[in-house]
Image (cartoon, rainbow, N blue to C red; front, side):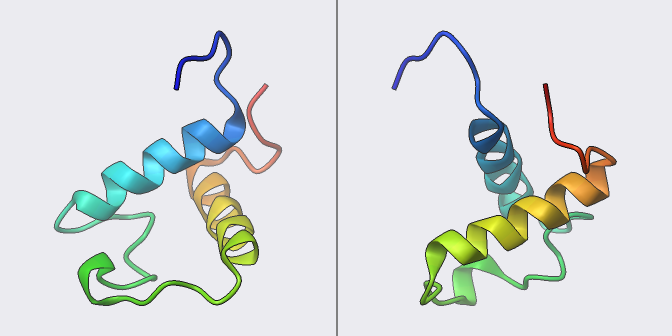
Amino acid sequence: MFKNEVAQLDAVASILCIESSMTTSAIVDSVGNALHSNFAEFPDQEYTKQEKITLDKLGAAGGFS
């Protein structure tokens, strides 16, 4: 999907994809192994939680501009 602007959701999703593929990760290690996980019952709430964790660990708690 092509867009002229990158949204915060795009940036966070990209970070989570890269971090999930790494053997060890400072951001998503608390979540566990992506290969041995189940889909969240409430994915929007799960994303919000992961977004907060990611932004907090990156020191961007106010979000990106």
